[in-house]
Image (tube, rainbow, N blue to C red; front, side, top):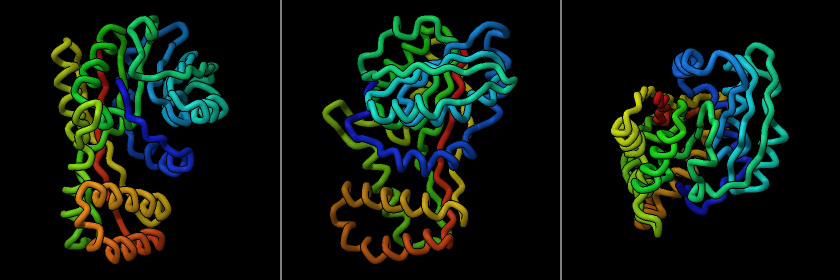
Length: 273
């Protein structure tokens, strides 16, 4: 696995954390709670943990003692994740964390030995087919459930609508699928590819929608998301840049004023071996 070389800023991760928590599919967690070992300490490996938002969301929803192994190659993000660890499980059991500076491309099956659960958030769409095949193989070899959340699906709805929305969305999706030195990224095709790859290895895969629904209370996040969305689209199709300047200015103004409603499609996968 390899999520590329782009460094994700702690500010962006903090801004999106509440929207991520609102979006993730809770029914998958309920199903997960029924299949995890009923007793003993659960060892949970969080791949590409960032600032540890997945643990802060999931640990309080699961009962029982938990030990989270946080994997990220960014030492600064790992430090934030370790400092912001969950306080307790759903039943008050202790939650401990262990931070490992990890290049996901170098993770081996032995690194996940003894895992009770593997998690990742906003990761699958950053991978190539080869990298996602490798992740599927690691999950299968670990022999435990995996909860893989918030992969983009390509669905974007903005209200009020603008004639440029469709052009920008198409260019953004092309950027998500762009060719890199590692291969072509899967982008919005990642969920379908992952489900197929995991099922081919004998796993049961449950897929649920987990869209961001951004409204008046998410003005800051909407503005930041929109700026990045348009920026990636213009990077993919340079000719869009001139057309998008006044469009982007007005949309960001509306977003900050709480006058835009945006749905950004994501999906969650629960993998049961």
